[in-house]
Length: 439
Image 1 (cartoon, rainbow, N blue to C red):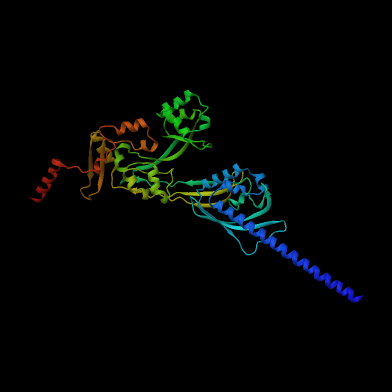
Image 2 (image 1 turned 135 degrees about the vertical axis):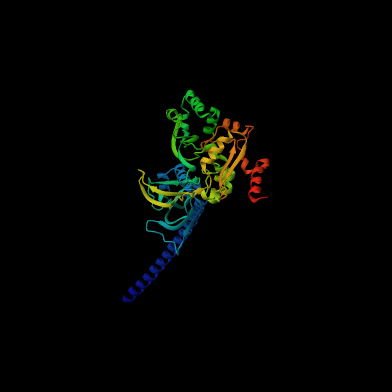
């Protein structure tokens, strides 16, 4: 009897061990299979992430996630944030270390490292993704439990990302006495709010057209050319802060006014060809200089010293990327770079001599210079006729540009940059030198 029990228990233990081994082997194989499938799903997701295929990414989200955020909201959020910080060269690398562990809740966690370039500096961080196995559209697979921390680790539901560019102060151009030839002043951007403009009266629109000397058809075209449905401000003109028209424009339905610093040339026509002027960067200029940190919204030296010394005068922009809570309170600074202001440029020119000579020319076509007989320093370089460079900074109407460009006296022509034979006007100087030397 005793032997029978021994045999029974021996057989029982062997059978139980066999079942346990088979169960363990099945569970292990099944877990490995799930792990590999989860890896495949997450690798596909990170690849789409790096390629910014946000619509495709959404299809791999869990059912729970899809209940909390719609596809349109998901795609829009990524596009707005990545667009705002100018994200590019995005790379998301899964960090697979050893065997994949299936959690007690049936979920699998993977870590990843994200790197990307922004308008401020490169950003890098690590994060954790949780995957769940479920069936969607008759397909059983592993899906991602998404939340805002995928955008930045510190983000929670309701948080926002704010990106601000800090523009550098352009270096001043001054004369020998420190008088400003190119400085800055407060200007006012006049812009259209498309939604409100569409409700404005025709009379009001005509008044804006008249005040700004911009054809109504041109204003309409600017609004229609705006592709962004969320646009709230379409700039149509910039005026000096003390312009009398501003009070009238402030009362006009459909317009918004924003103050900003603009380049200012106190000596206007008298120094226009020498100092030059700045203007909005063209597409061609942007393509040549975008690797130097220029943006499509920047201004750039267009002529004269403003163009020649662009690199010295412009400085470099700074900026901040911050995470805020739903009320707008800053929670975390993601990246920050301080703006470097442009360096000043001091000339040997005497602005008052320059102005006096210009006034003496009285808009007659010609050029004149004044040079110190003791030092050889250039005290004045004058061109006539001339133009007010502030008109280019603030924005010139098509009519004004046509009148200036077709002026037979060619006010845009820089005469002192060309060769002019002095003729008989130099003979008295030659004679004086001869008399002085006893020739």
